[in-house]
Image 1: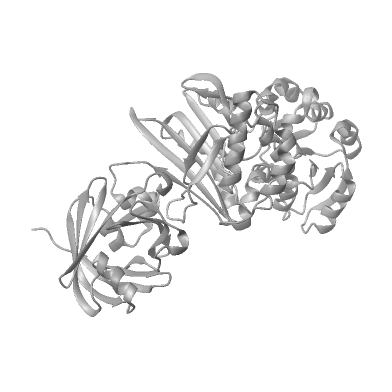
Image 2 (image 1 turned 30 degrees about the horizontal axis):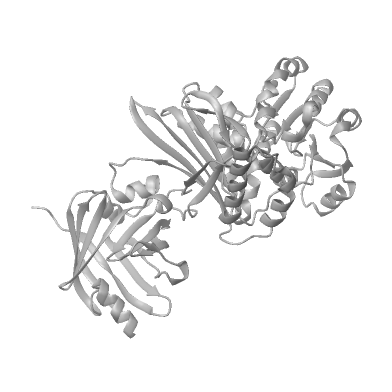
Length: 554
């Protein structure tokens, strides 16, 4: 199979070539206007397919198709918003040459208009698929899965790239170009307009049982989903899609510029795209992780429901996700499953299982969350990961009623003056090699109070589900201090990982946050706990480990 990739040495085209590197039956034509860059890419390519550099301007695509005779054209160039009046030149050339076509288009109007070529594509016996990327191929696959159990009424989604992923200049031109401009979407059942990058929301991407991303600031982006999904989901009344690039300070500057352009009817900000491109690709700090979410609200059995899908991509794996849709289609094609002829968007082109098969080979993890306010606290936070916990851990957290567990513990205490003072303020127990311990669990509001008794020494904390920036985190309050912790399933352990903290309600610096390895597990049929609390400068404040068993209720 010979594949011609326009923009083959660029961000998306280059990554697609890498994803196909294990397929010896392919021939990849790496095309672009700069022959030297195409040659450099091919010289450095490490893979089974044969690669050939080709100097090609998209305006000359018809001649190139006749000369090179590819089986498939992939347009990975863009920005598709800037193709002007002759925006479908490559599509029309492919129909004339009877050559199949896929593209990475993120321009909503471009993808929405591809249907006009459906009859011609069918007559030519070829497939034309537009927008074959995360938006809308992956979002549509997620919503298809959700629609099996609910009637979807509203959808929100977003993508949050790693700050180390980098962003292509063409992508930046497209995004900055529609900042402050009208963006077509559906709201309250009406087709209307939002304002690009001027509307914002905050969301925490949190795959059940894994360390979540920090709370991300998302802004409205003009992606094909906004126009395509209402057509695919007739009952949809609202849709919103966003992007959450970091650092947030630069993102918020772009928000302000978008609002100013909209309010004062200023010209396009596209001339500044080079500046944003340069700055954003140099400000690389924070966690090298990216994510994506889709949240749907609707009805199931006549009752309101909310469900969300989360994706986490570690390190360098995230930037490959936009190219995986075309990778999946090519692999299915080679296996004998060819897309039906015709011209259409990528909505419905892939199932979520197609993506899961590709994610399984990388450090990419996904999961659904069902938002059930009546469920016990830890089940709400862990979702389906709760069922993977050891039996004793599930048993302790499976109830939302008052209960009591008893056992024995070892307690260690810090010896410094500040450590003793901090322990005294909270009421932590004194050091002991073996002391009886009782923990009483009492419902309080939407949370649970834990009252611990170590040999007559009592102290308590209030655990609850985080809100806002603490969403998807367990918040535990000890007097004036509150700690937001991620519940992370690590083998047979449930680890509690501190992420944020406040003192007297005031957010405190992360580098001053008390920390320490803490986990729950099962041992010999008993619940086992191991908690260590340390603080910068102070060192060890307290550490306690032991086992618990439920107290029978008479």
